[in-house]
Length: 266
Ligand code: NI
Image (cartoon, rainbow, N blue to C red; front, side, top):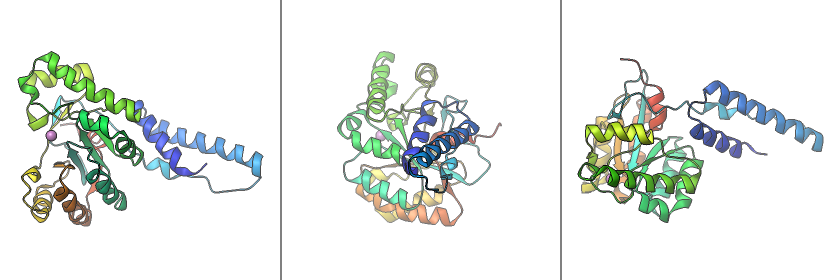
């Protein structure tokens, strides 16, 4: 047994049982690796080092508030978020860029794309990123009936869950269009906080990748939630410079639920 599947299982276990504490996760890794080693000893009588790196998986939370555009944290942490995908070329290219820098991100997928590209969803989860719900057909939720909103969220939720085995735990309203009442009942029914953003580079207007990079870097501060779209090639071109410049400033990139787990009491 090599280490990667164990790590993936742990990530999955964490997402399925969000209340699991980091201590339990460490125990889980320890138990799994000890059992594996014992079994292997019986079979081959060789000694190999016990894998330990899986304990770097961070705790997660859906926070205490109905919505967030920024999280008060005590450290240089940022959440990169990518909306409207997955896209068959751009999302895999983005995943390569993130992997090369060990940066984690959150993908707010649209249900219609989620159904078309389940393999990309599985890769997102396998590489330690997170998937959030961005509705099924990308309408303005604030103009829909409760039943309409419920349907939009449920179909996307089910598509992600059936492709990956991991349910989304946060949502982002298309266009940021959502009412206070909707935020409250969505939290009640789905358990989702509504996740907005602290920096919008307006990448969908295609201002050029250097402009997108500069806007994201200039807007970043601790606890920030950076918005962009993985359906645009120019946005993907902007991301290496964003990551490299912000990592050089000491920032670390975590998922939205990892950022929420770091929230400081006000
Ligand atoms: Ni969108």
